[in-house]
Image (cartoon, rainbow, N blue to C red):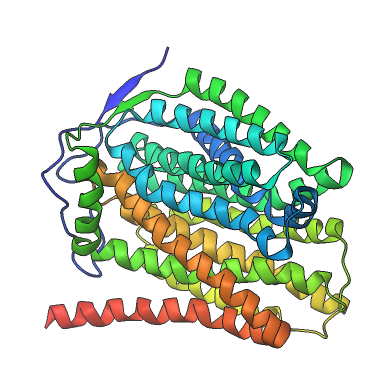
Length: 427
């Protein structure tokens, strides 16, 4: 039988955290202490991975899907874009509901909606129904961003970073496995099968989550309109949120740039890789996801500041590593694999540091904080993809890698101003 846990009555508005300061906990409204089991953590991590993968299945299949639906090369880009738009809308308008409505019911509703949208995509033979399904797939996939703060609510403060890091590692594995898995399935059958299988997985997942998840009823008494308006106040009054979101935006821009352009490089004349070869390359990046649980443990020990700086440096160095060797050589390919692992490592580590930090700001608005955090750095990813495509078209990997190198360094430069602000405040 499902349990229920409830957070205490929230304060009227957000409690700002000083610029550069580390939050000290969910004060004055802590979550009731609850020891989250390893089994529950594993379930939440697996659920996040399976749900978030739905956003990324179509990325390597844009060509086959576009050809099947009779799309022009320009319209083919909408296959991925509409899913991203749906996800962005969900971050802003659905994720905040985690502070207002019962979380278990919200997650199950979104997973069920995702199953229907995936089935719709699988059955589509024309562009319009597929585009509508793609939008809803992105919208409903924000269930993962209800589950992550849900896990933070269940974890005691002393191990919150570890739990969030473990759940985030599942999410990141879902992102990284989605592309090669969909490529391999399509190579063996068709793209329709990818969506049919995923719809079935969502149905099974909904049944498992229905039995396993405890209920969590937020104590917030705001209306939905007031809830959305409060997000603007949170942005203004919470410098830690702004900083952490912008740090991650720089790294996620580099991540998106790399994974948008690396397949183009590998498919080009220098490497001449097949779809299967590119899928195998994408599997290498999965190793970077192991950084998230280690980063979570480091955050619990108070090492978020130093860890974030290191994560940004690792992501920048990755692009220098990718330039080693002549294009097309085994040395160059090996260095690209190493770069993929380093980029994913830096991004996943900093994500764990960032989410652990913002989840300590207050239980009563944790879902809104998470929605804002994700929405801001998601925009960074969209910028990275667009700039990466332009850079690769203009100057190949040479220009692209330098742009990728600059993005984490911009985040690091902004990170350095945190210490300048602290010194000015101390005077």
